[in-house]
Length: 161
Image 1 (cartoon, rainbow, N blue to C red):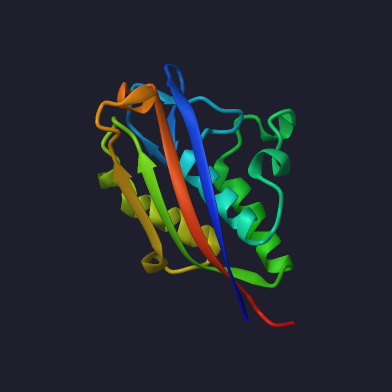
Image 2: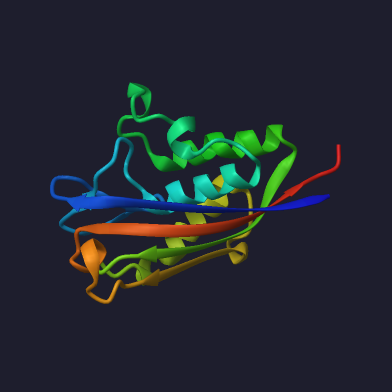
């Protein structure tokens, strides 16, 4: 068995007129994340970390924003495609650790649902998914409530063929 690690990052601006989706969960807030898909920075950073661990190109190359079929798509559907890629590569996720950085809204009450969504798609136990919420202490665009970002690290195992 081979063990591989990957890291992912994503950031999107907060704008009016969009739903806020994080970890596949709709969060009641006056702004949402701007993006070609649903703008889910948590799922996007998880996808990028998985793609890195298995030696693939990044999420933007894998799901280009120039392709109309991804406009408004649920990022959980993108993660489903990545789960199929892992299967083809005879690999699986062992664990995920993510940090969502947002001044507003309060993220922690939604973490359980986010874990459940990711767990279901990747077929791993929620106990192997860490999601933490941090503020940006009023610094920069995140601190001013203009954006949300996320970092993720993943451990992937490749089974012997």
